[in-house]
Amino acid sequence: ILNVEQSPQSLHVQEGDSTNFTCSFPSSNFYALHWYRWETAKSPEALFVMTLNGDEKKKGRISATLNTKEGYSYLYIKGSQPEDSATYLCAHQKSNQFYFGTGTSLTVIP
Amino acid sequence: GAVVSQHPSWVICKSGTSVKIECRSLDFQATTMFWYRQFPKQSLMLMATSNEGSKATYEQGVEKDKFLVNHASLTLSTLTVTSAHPEDSSFYICSAEGTDFSQYFGPGTRLTVL
Image (cartoon, rainbow over the protein chains, first blue to last red):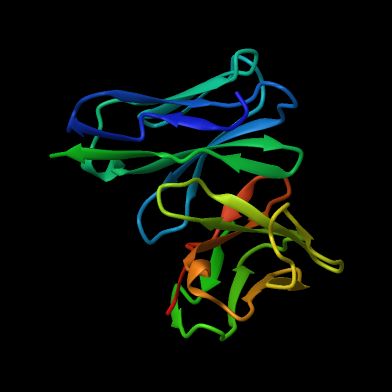
């Protein structure tokens, strides 16, 4: 994998459903993997920073896992709520530079 | 904490004019700030790294004479799009580096060149 790739590109789920998305990144020269939540007209909000293979982070209903050997991270949202609707970006950090995926746009339908 | 502002949030200008975008870290100091550009349905692409007290470094393919980056203080970086043309229309967003190499983003600037 040469670039950071996210899938799916967009997702619609019903309120209360759980969901997950994927971020794939080059496994060489890995420093850190970042997840951001980006609502329209606002600044991207940092969710997680993960550095170690096997890392699992959790914030409320949102959690993330990291596999640096195979170059992927999963973001999970449990019991989705309408306020979770946003674009979720991942960024692969090499040194102090970030390389972003195109994001997953999540819409939670009430 | 770690709030970054960006001004203006949107700007419309005529072809050939120059536009300056400001990025400020409001509650922390940032030696390094970054400027990204995003075209529709594409990812944020790093344009330049702004370093306080030294010249900015530009990514390959970014014209440094067209996109002037200046890091005037530990809380302010500016991006000036000189002699803007319609193909420069895009979404520009800055970030400021925190002490742990995390990046804190502004809300972005939508530039439309007529």
